[in-house]
Image 1 (cartoon, one colour):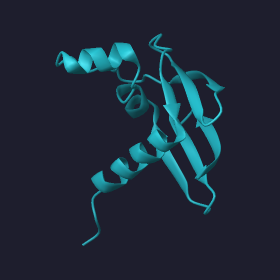
Image 2: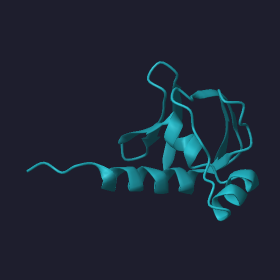
Image 3: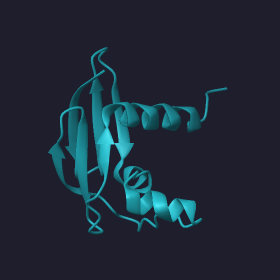
Length: 101
């Protein structure tokens, strides 16, 4: 379970602090590309995923119970990220990391 969310504007990451003590960084640009709002989902169905410019970062947020509403520097402010979805993104990111030999 997520205990705390921290937005690090300098590093351009959203840090999740979990109840087991782990800290997971989710890059702002990855979060923007993973938006599940109706506009972004409609584009994906048409084969047009969101285009995320380099340097896109979180400029604002609002807590919404068991979710967070993120606002990005490209003007996109429609995405609501439920905590379970953030954990799914974190798991997907972890599987993409190279393993040590």
